[in-house]
Image 1 (cartoon, one colour):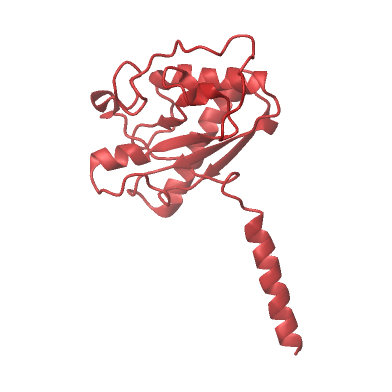
Image 2 (image 1 turned 90 degrees about the vertical axis):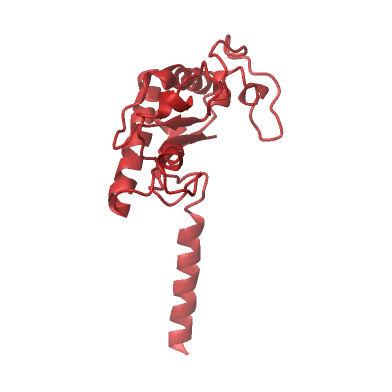
Length: 192
């Protein structure tokens, strides 16, 4: 009978431990190979690539006025393809955690939003492609997320508003085994 009580207690503790690891708080940084990003428009805001083909001159960033919040709890600027706040995925070069120049205005827009909304919190979720060991990809994903976090903090964002999590290769958005798929998986997602 004591064994059943111990197993029940162990199951309860395991459940509580897993409940503490919510998907909002833990996500992974990604591996990136930027050699093809420019050619495919991934990192180029002037193209119709993955950034939505918009410029960074969107409205709603002045004065900290972000209007009514939408159904997802975020203001409408996050849904406006002409606003850099709608871009919440940062892509990286292969084996790199250095943020590419094309994404600096996007990160700056998110920093301004977080500064104007100190109660908001963002999880920097690092992800990588399938190449490399699991441990390497987890580490690289974390480095990528931390590099974005460092840029946000350098612009005045409170560390309390940021969380970093690395998923390595565990949460791919593209399931292929080619460069175009790997390119999409080398990313950090900003999850509010």
